Image (cartoon, rainbow, N blue to C red; front, top):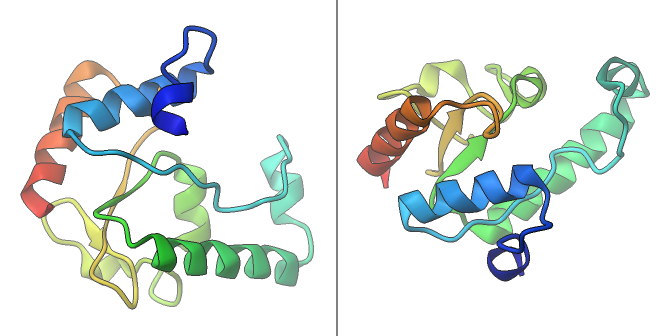
Length: 134
């Protein structure tokens, strides 16, 4: 669906940028959100019941395992705040050549700025790093 729907002229810019990036890597993509609750005020969301956040993250992690991605990109520092740490999804000690490994898997993980704010040079660098691990 993403490949055909988001190439439409009226598609949101974020998804157009993802599609363009995926085309550069010559791979298809799947987009999922870490959290299913939709809230623009991230501080408010992060201050909700920690079990609520944990349960959503567990569901997303299980979904990622079922998808079996070639590589994972988190285009947000906000995501890194939620999942980066020795006791979380991505252990900082797993870093190798600019990528990490999703705990319990061999899936390479990259953290980057929002895809819509990355320069062409930043995207090319990310693509080069991606090609090294896939």
